[in-house]
Length: 201
Image (cartoon, rainbow, N blue to C red; front, top):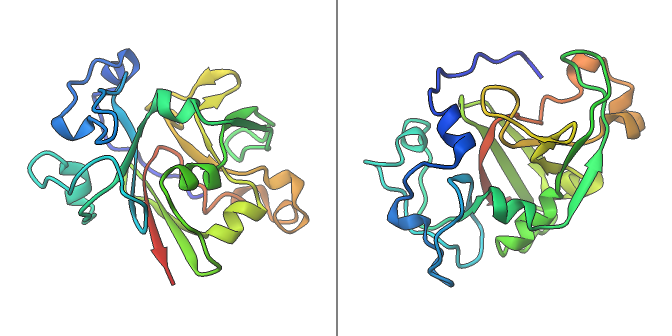
C-alpha cells in the first residue's frame, strides 16, 4: 500500500480512554443500550435494518467531507467488534519487512452481523480516516479471509499508528499475492479503516 499522510487528529488520547461523548444515534435501536466506547466502524449501503439513523451533516463532519451519504447504518464500537469470533494471521508487513500477529473478526462475519446477504456481485468499499479507499468483492473477502484487525502483536492497534481498525489478510499464504513485491501486496487493505459501504453490482 502506498504511504499515506495521516490527518492531524488530536483525538487519539480521547479514543484510547474511551471518553468521547456519544451522540444520540450511538444508541442501538434494538437494545437502546449505549455503547461502552466510541463508534469505530460504520457500515452503510446494502445492509439489514441497521442500528443508527441517517447521516447528520452537522455532526458527521468527516463522512460529510468525504462525500459519504446514507439513510441508515450499522455501527460498531470496540466491544462489539471484539465480541465477534476472532481470527489470527501473521503476514509480513511492508513497513518493516517482518511478520506481525494481527487479530480480529473476519470481514465476512462483520458483514453478516450487519445483515448483508452477499452475492457474487456484492462489493465492499473500505475507507480510511484520511480518505484512502479500497475495493474488494465479498468473494475476495471470503477467499483471502480478510479480517478487521483490532489487535497488533497482542495489543489494541492505536490511532496514529495503523488503527484502531485495519482491514487486512495474510498475503504470505496465497501464491498469487505472495508472488507480488512486498510493497504491492496490501493496496486493498486500508489501515485506520472506519467506514465500509456495501454495494451490489
